[in-house]
Image 1 (spheres, helix red, strand yellow):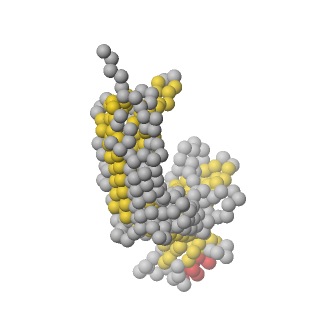
Image 2: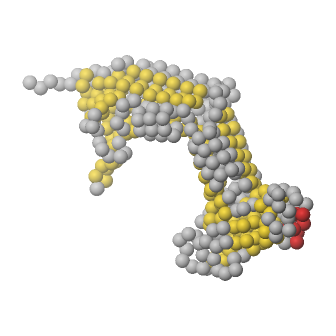
Image 3: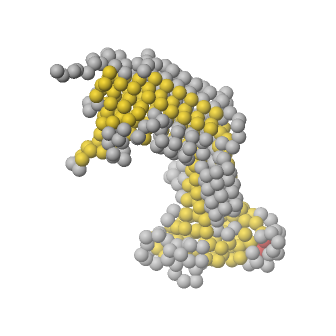
Length: 408
């Protein structure tokens, strides 16, 4: 006798298995769960090395291709060892509960409207509240949590990243947000009181954001807008835009500054690197920099020592052409003030490839600046000519006499 599975309810949430396939086989296996409007989901996800088991005690479930309906509230799907295997869940518009704390796969979860309680698993998950007053728990792994409030109105949410390097995502906001990962004050845009717990990094949105990191390592992305970013302690990664003000603080930080786009005005960003050996990937013009040790000007690596010491204004290290270049190239460096006066210049004594030291010595105008012992804003221009082609990058930095040493 063959027992038939219970018939699916017409209004049940659907669960199916999808995959991307080509001649070499199938990959990116995804279990897709889509709830229906008007449902109050209470979902628990468990499983084994062979099966994913999904149970919804709040609403019925239906099984799509390659999955099997156990009863009205439970569906099982085969598990794959493929690295792309994950669960993609989109819940309904009421107050839902979702628990994937023992899920043996990565998770992409959208709670939908309603006041939801959403718990991720031990892998790197992407969890969005979808609007409402939500409680989000990332669990183990490097998670990305967003309340999903968007721009239709904000609610007070709690985002708990748990262990791992976790990110709070406000990337869909048009109003500016304030986020400080080192204090206990509420975060979000004006009128919002989000609580961020166990969060190491943050993504801003389209507005003018104020983003501050914690004492450990983290990733901060300002997004469009005129943002104020304070990375603080730890070895941080910062992604800034053209008009941002960035203070890196302590630690060996990495910063990505944007490319200059044709037809778009150059930015007037300010970057203060601070203590630590900071690495700046710099593709545009218009930034003012202070205490930044290492720049990557496109394909060219440059180290700056922005201090006047005797007759030497700057020391550039690792100046050259493209890292994969096979030809010879010649590099010229000079520093000019706002009036266009060259304060210092220098070239290698011989042809440079990949790595050469270039000492940039003061001109007469530069020595007068040093004699006044004042901090001076200058534009440092690096030109690399290779096989008849010239690449040029410039950066504005602040120079100051070295404390305790008279200029000479």
